[in-house]
Image (cartoon, rainbow, N blue to C red):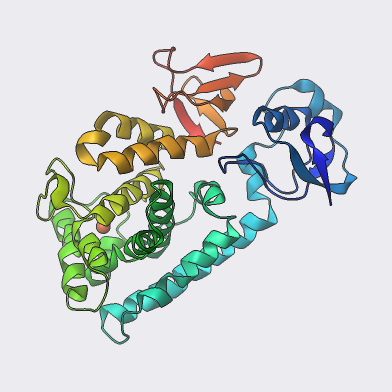
Length: 363
Ligand SMILES: [Fe+2]
């Protein structure tokens, strides 16, 4: 392994450690065999040096010369082949299994509620993902997995931690947000499993029964010796600032500040997850939804921070447009976060200026 100035990079060099931008976005995962295109991208982020392997690898001629994106693996495809991703995927699945067991025992009160012990594996997952910077890269590429309550709880915990970090909250609040994200749906352990596992959309009656998980969860923890924000989150994570949520139709500051963070993490994870009755919703459609109704429904600082940061995690990702065109996100427009500029071949498409064009998937 050696440190090389980005000016001296040449195609065929192999990246030996994940390359991050100065604001913590992953630009090139470990083991990437650099093409000229990768090098141009790394240079565009004003980086000085990166670590590469001593040995070089051949870059196929056609891959280099074509300049098209459809011949080479996308950023996501390369990431999914890295050792880090494979290990992370295995570990989060193991953690989900362990969490299932703990939640079951908590629900029938056969073990005490030890928040620190429960959240410990979440911090290990962070370390494996390369910290806050890498976590969304990992989560975005786990989207085809089954999203049972336990995997969802881990995701929401990781996202809540990241959002609290982006908001620059003090460390103790970041920890509470992490624990509240993990435990927010504990009440689902007290909902009949046929409702949780139903592979069709719930009827109104069933949805009402499902919504009771917030009250059942709160009942389960209300007398326990845990942080009050965690209790409030279990009760309030479906409340909306405009009063349209449930169970208490709370408005604005009546909603717990940590619960406001978990609500955003919960909505984002739910919408971008595959469900039995629908495909995952493209993150850019979710961001567009947040742009339209975010300020009415969510805590303004939290939602603005979330949107501003989440879009940056997609820079350099390959996306498909509703026209079927495929390109790479190269620039985020701060005034239209869901409408970045895409490079398709030699063409630059500014989605903010092209009415009717939108991103349908990240590939
Ligand atoms: Fe919930």
